[in-house]
Length: 334
Image: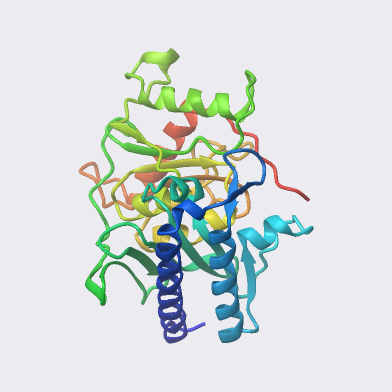
């Protein structure tokens, strides 16, 4: 697909995301009428707003691009087919409302995430946070040599500012993860046992925050840990250079697809949050499987004062994070 076709697709998705955002803003004014249903448990929720946005976007996409495949969170969750559905063909991947719990509590970290994949690679990403800024904030990108990444702030009549997301940002901190800002989520799996994913995540967060030398040498001394309640926004903030590391597991391709497209275009990388089996200290680290449910994202950066390339810095930081974190066990139905 050439760049002009991708630009058209990007602009179409951006307009669609804003339409859906207006729908959510209207729904937010009816907060007293909200009714949420549990899926997995009491923190895994779906509202009529999630389902309404998915229908709005799905119908528009399939009318404009009838030959494209479509994967949406709510239609996947409601259906009987639970396998990983992404193929190499042009495919839209949608989370109609990432941050449903935030939406219910009127916490503004909620977003519409529209991703588009070619050859199983996130290629266009549009993330609209309708409750940030005056009338919403849009992050978007086309992952292509002639593409770009942008941030738009909206007023009541349209965008009042659109800026390119500047990349590459500065080098990573010299002793990273020390000095980094780390994003991670507690997730929906709240089972309580010594080997549960929840217990392992708590251990990871404490390890990353602890002073250097603490926790048996696993202390990371990061500047801070942020949990926004939206994996989409976690990835986007790292992609935009407002954080350094996103460590996540247990989410799904619709939570990260659009954000990964933005991250890749701004020079970031995303790998498995568990080290691949038998990988050596010198092996190149492969990109994460978008359907693998485990993601470790590192922001883009420029060459440092020691002459290390961006990729060398990023892979070194990945290995340091792996040393300090427990291996998380998330499967998907087969």
